[in-house]
Amino acid sequence: MKRELLDNGNIWQKSDGRWIGMVRYKDEFGVAQRKSFSSKKKKTLQAKMTEYVKNFNEQVANSDEARKPLKESMKNWLRVYKYPEVERTTYDRYECTAEHQIYPYIGNKPVGDVTPADIKKLLTKHMNNGYAFTTSKKAYSLLKMFFKQLFQEGAIPSNPIAMIDMTKKDNYLAAQNKESKPQCDLVVVFTDEELEKIKEEAFKKFANGKPVYQQAAAYFLMLNTGLRAGELCGIINSDIDLEHRVIHLQRGVKEVHVRDGLEYVPKLEVKVGKLKSKTSKRDVPLNDNAIEMIQKLREEVYLGEDAPLIPDENGNFTNPRNMRNRFYRILDAIGLPHKGLHTFRHTFATRLINGITQPDGSVKALSVKQVAELLGHTTSEITEIYYVKRDTTRLAGLTDNFNL
Figure 1: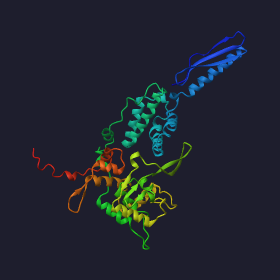
Figure 2: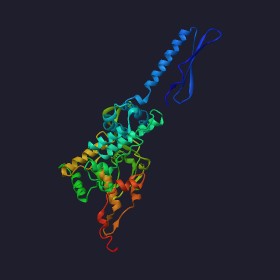
Figure 3: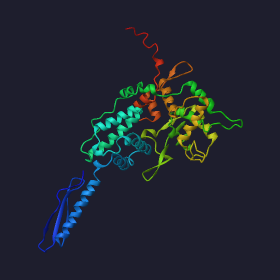
Figure 4: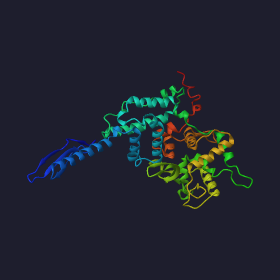
């Protein structure tokens, strides 16, 4: 709530001749309070009270969130409420979204003057300017959190985004003349041919026997375990139990913006910390190929049980971005388009759920729930929707004996 004066003050004279004054007001919690004054002279008392009322009104005006430009208000909201609450990478994303998808459109407008029409126009401009649907949705979600909190705290009289829904994805893409496809069709995986080409190039050696590409086995360890790049970079040798064929995931590596206090600095740093979610801290089983890749990595460089499995040139944790850039060099060498390291994770999930043909011709497959647990997902729906590419070839002939 906002502090407010209940009167401009009352004064009276006591029997001993002293002048007494009192100003009543409501504090930020809506509780009535009073400020008392006293003086030997009435004129002095009146001056004190006038100065107090003036300062009180100025403080209220300065703290009136509704009159602040949205950019100033949202920056403060992010720092006070979101920075302590979310992961650094999430906060970086919030800040980036605000800077590029919100402030250029309504950043200078007073918070209390933002209307539903302003927000709708902002989303429409995103669509017309060719922004991806997910980019626009992130801006919508950030605005929704921001205005909801301001309204609940009484800083604004109404919530301008309460009646605004995010444009449906199909309509958003149609307006951009783009085809709307099921999410499972958008999942990117490696084909058998691509994997063979990548493997052949990745393990090339110079004439002196040294590998052309550093720590190339890491990519095929990802393929056989479904590890995220940050998870892989966070593994130290003592996390690996080859005897029991398992990796105990304990930590992850992320790249975040450097900050001077809370201020953004245009520089990145590697942060080693907790994993993405509670379910991400898990035991990852190792098949024969995964064990072979770990052994290859250790043959290339091994700095002890307390050192990273994949150390950088200084023996520290490797930046996932450096791993990605080295992988792009492999793709460039064989003429394949760039696909992110997460593609190995998608391929792992897709192969296990769609099934792998065994030497006897049978197909061995895992359930979505089993693969979700291997990937460290909180729900199997995430795995099914976002990680598995649909194999329509398996439908061929299924209705042959169902003549209706």
